[in-house]
Length: 160
Picture 1: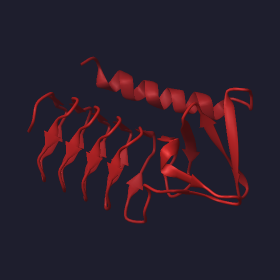
Picture 2 (picture 1 turned 60 degrees about the vertical axis):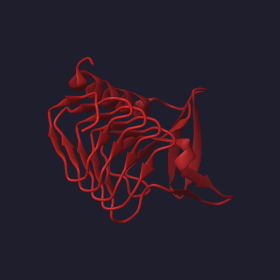
Picture 3 (picture 1 turned 180 degrees about the horizontal axis):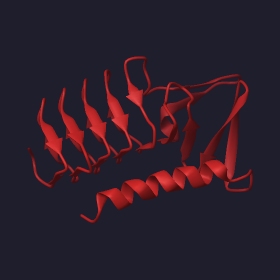
Picture 4 (picture 1 turned 30 degrees about the vertical axis):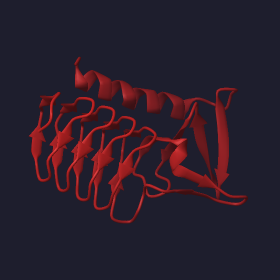
C-alpha cells in the first residue's frame, strides 16, 4: 500500500503549491465576497472558506453556484473539516464529523460522528457511526468499518 505519510505529505505540499501560484491558464476563479476560490481541474481549493479550516481540496460536485453566491453541500456547523483534507466526488459525509489531514477517495461514506485524522480512505469505503481512524491508517477499497471501531496506524484491506 505504500507509505501513507508520504502520500498525505504530498497532498499537503500540492495544496500549498497551488495556493501560492499566481493566476494562469490552469486556474478558474470564482469570486465570493472579498475572496477568490481557486479551481484546479475538478477541485476547489478552499482556504478557511465555507466552514472549512485551512487549505482543502474539495471536488466541484459539492458546490452549488448561483448568479451571486456559491455554497457547499458537505459542510454543516457540526462538522470540522480541515486543514489539508481531500474529498473526492460521490462521497456521503454525514454530521458531527472531524476530518483532518486526510484523503477520502471516490464514493466513500462516512456516518455520523466519524473522526478521521491523518489517514487515507480508498474508493467506496463505508465508515460506521462513531468510528475513529487515526495516525496514518490506510483503509483499502470497498472496506466496511463497523460503528465505534478504533483504528490507529493500521492498514486494512478487508471488512472489519
